[in-house]
Every structure is written in structure tokens, then in C-alpha cells.
Amino acid sequence: SYENYKLVQITVGNKQEAIDLEKKFPESNETKLFLPAIVERPGSYLFSESSFEKLKQTKFRYNVLNENFQRTLDEEEQVTRMQNVYGRRILHTFPTHAAINEYIEELALQNQSLASVEVIGYSYENREMKIIKIGRGHKEGTKPIIWIDAGIHAREWATPVTALFIISSLLEDYSTDPITKALVDKYDWYILPSANPDGYEYTRVGDRLWRKTRSLQVGNCIGADPNRNWDFHWNEVGASYNPCSDTYAGPKAFSEKETSAMSNYIFRHKNLIKVYLTIHSYSQMILTPYGHSYFLPPNFREIMAKAKIMENAFYKTHGKRFRSGPPPYLLYPVGGGSYDWAHQVCGIPYAFAFELRPDQNSRNGFVLPVNQIQATGEETWAAVKSLAQSLE
Figure 1 (tube, helix red, strand yellow):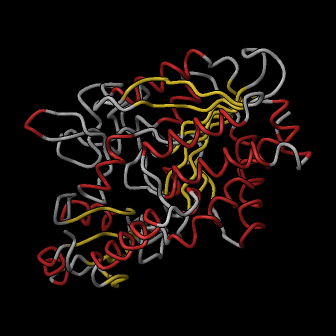
Figure 2 (cartoon, rainbow, N blue to C red; figure 1 turned 135 degrees about the horizontal axis):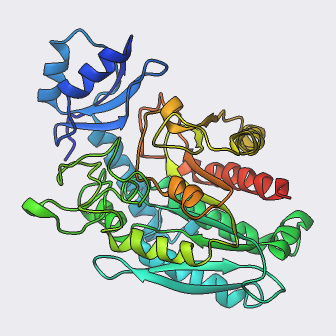
């Protein structure tokens, strides 16, 4: 339980202070990293009572965003339970992995001329990883593909349901909205709404803030960070060698069944994929390559032009401001991430990671209030749609 854990915002004045902070409070059960502190932006950390006492003894500047994080989790659980009892529409709640798969199967059945479902692999605990493929007309394998995945990090509950919102919009608006119709006619959309099924299920029954997969690692530690596990600058930066850490990169690249299934599938279709988009939360950002270094990709200007189009779409929908750029400039360098691999190894021209709501000052962090699910879906679909429209 996270009883009396505090969500604390910490401001660092310079690079050294950021390094000291990381040394003094490494990730553990007592200290959870939500967002790292960098000079340009305060970070958010979840501290146990003992960690918080330690923090008070330091010179770090902080303010408490949330006095007792367990309260926030209890409220979420109550609302989620109520919704499951009353069978609220799936797009207004945080559905289980099984419910997600059932929902896309159902949509494919109702829209047989537009959609089909394919199992691309199995998780460590043998759950099916299903993608829905949406497109019209030409034989498969002739149209450019837009790939979207969500739920790579288990605790980011806002993301699978947002992927479902996009799926539902593509299918439901096909007959009423000419723009959507054109995008479904022109592209094949491959969408994987639940990319880390075991981790996601564990956040419902075990630890709500679990991030990794659920594979058994050395020393009886569980899981690797699936977004540090891709075979591009793997384990060079921004990841941990410690199997118990939240950012453990795994014993080797693609050690995890989930990332292995995804990467095999994407690699097989790489010549047709024009966009790779992975949906994360939180902090309202559009992240671009590269994650691992301050170098910029050759088509960086084109990538940023697309990011600005999406920023604009996010803002126009519900007034939420998103910032764009590579992780080293906005967050911190990180190797082994999925979209760097997609861009560099597969040659997919446009690769992005979204960090959805809320913004960095949120007292809820990964716990998106249920009454914001719909708005989050709407603005994210608007951004995706604007990107697809802007492709040549």
C-alpha cells in the first residue's frame, strides 16, 4: 500500500543538483520516480514516510503535491469498481486486458469489411497480444501502414483506453466523416492497445504503480522495462543493470516476449510502415527521435514539423499544451526505446511517443481521473488524425 506516501515536486538549480538527487534517492520501494527533475523542469517523486524524512534533511527545494497517494488510488479503485458493476461503456473506464481483446474482436465482427484482428504473440504469462487492423479496399500489403501501440508501461492506464478510443473513432466515423473515411481508405491502421498485458493486469491486482513486464529475472526480481528492452543503443543510457529496478533493461535486448513479438511483427512490415506511434503517460509531450543521444536524425526538421501539427491539434481540442522534442532535451537520454528502434533500425520515417495528460504539476500522476478519459481520447485522436492527414 502507498499509505502516507507523498507525491513531491522537486526543483533542481543545476545539473549537479539533479545528479545528487538521483544518487541520494535511487529508485526503490521507498522512492518512486514519476518524472525526473531537470534544470528546465521540476520532477515528481513518490516518497514513503521515511524517504520524505530524509528529504527534509536535505537542501533540495520541494513542494508536496499530494499528502497521501493511497487516497488517490483508493478513489480510483472505487470509481473503477462502480463502473464495472454498472457496465459503463468501455471507453469511459479502464478496461481489463481481457475486456480490451473482447472489445476489438467485437468491433472487427461488426465491421468485417473494414477490420480484422490478429494475434501477434503471447506475453510471459501467456496472454494474447492482439492487434486490430483497420483499412479498406486494396489487398493487404499494398497500402502504407500507420502503427500505434499503447500500454507498454503497465501503470499508464490512460493509454490502452485511448488506443481503443482511436480504434472506435476510425470505425464509427468511417461512414459519417469524409476525412476519417479517406484515412481508412488510404492507410492500413495496425493498433495494439495492450502491449504489456501481464504488467497491466498486475497493476489491477497487485501494485498499481508497477511499470515493467512480469518475467522472472535473476535474484527473484520480476520484470524488465519493456521500453528499455529494444535493440538500439540497448542499456547504454537511462536504464538500469539492477533486475529489481523499475528501469531494468532486461538481461539482453528483446529478452521479453512482449517486445520480441512486437519487434518481429513491426520488422516484417517495416517497408510499409510510415508512422510508428507509441502512447505513454504522463506530462503532455510529443517525443521525437533520438532518445539515446543529443544527435538529431537527418529528417529532424520534417519530424518536428509533424510534431507541431499535432501540438496544435491537441491544443485546439481541449486547450491542453503539449511540448515536442527529443527526450534528451525535454527529459533525459534513454536507450533501448521502441520508437528509436522503429525509426533507426526499421527506417520508419515518422516515429513518436506521446506522453498524455495530465501535465507535470499533477497531484495524480499516472492516475488519470475517470472523467477525463473521454477528453484525453478526443484530443489524442485529433492529433493522430492531423498527423495522418499531413502525410504525403
